[in-house]
Image 1: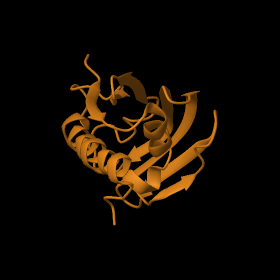
Image 2: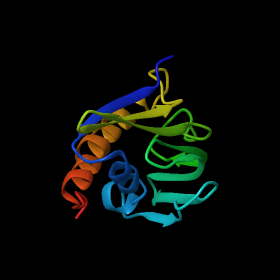
Image 3: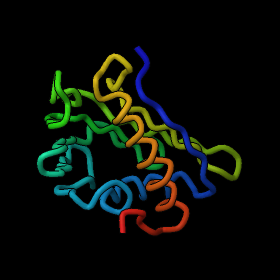
Image 4: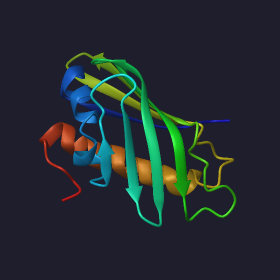
Length: 144
């Protein structure tokens, strides 16, 4: 099973990338409630009638790594298992490479065998490679 992954490279420092990831409403969605300041913080993403997910910060290494565990989820548009995201992890690994920073994103548990894989993979690609990259590089939200 191959988890969904996407990798980006930016000119900002690992610390700047890490700080940007924590500002979820600026690059993922404004439908955000909760906190992402420290280990065990929890937050909810909710698009009524489409997507609900509750995440918990289970690993925080400033400038290097963030891991969110999805503790509850409902993807209303799925036909087989609307709770596919529950117990999956979103992993952000940050590595310096010369004057650049490499961000490797993995949605652990989002695999091709899952109904959500194709559509969620397209969504993550857009959110990470467009939204997060733009926010990291320009400081502006792509979800205006």
